[in-house]
Image 1 (cartoon, rainbow over the protein chains, first blue to last red):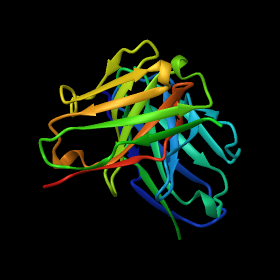
Image 2: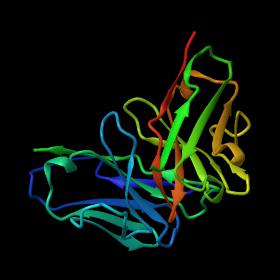
Image 3: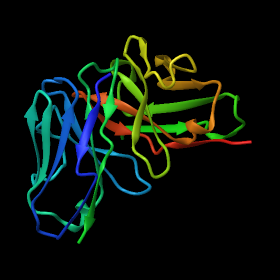
Image 4: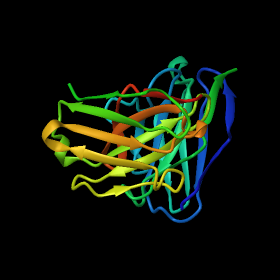
Length: 109
Length: 116
């Protein structure tokens, strides 16, 4: 099974900051990497798929990069509504096997 | 409006069974791979099942042999049959549509509680 490791597990930042979350796969997943945002009591929301393609309606301050085993999610200028938990997810063998990272909780400093 | 609505959650005793349903609307259900994902309160997301558009099914080791997903395209419905439930299966269960290799549409979730 492909394991996904996110870092950091939690992060505090100010509105306006630039933040980066990292996700590492236990083996190459080429570019089959997706990012989700989750807020309390709500279903996860797809932000970015295939490493760097923004889902429709997602603000351009979100961006993704990487390939192989190492990937990043960057938020260029944090807005109050961005404070949430973020998950990476590999879909290299979808629908046969999917794994999520453990999540990164982004909090207001 | 593209929508997924789960139902069937509830309280079940350890060792018991439960069948979840997911009703799809607003899109051509038969054309999409679908997934079940669960989340234990305060914990992360765990993929539980994937089902291809043709009905082929896939599971992680944690539920393989206990959970069975199926779909009824004529009814735009997805199902998850869960057997031999344990406390560790207590979670909110989501159904989700796969698109562009990500899951772009999610239901609101249904809560399963396994307890005596």
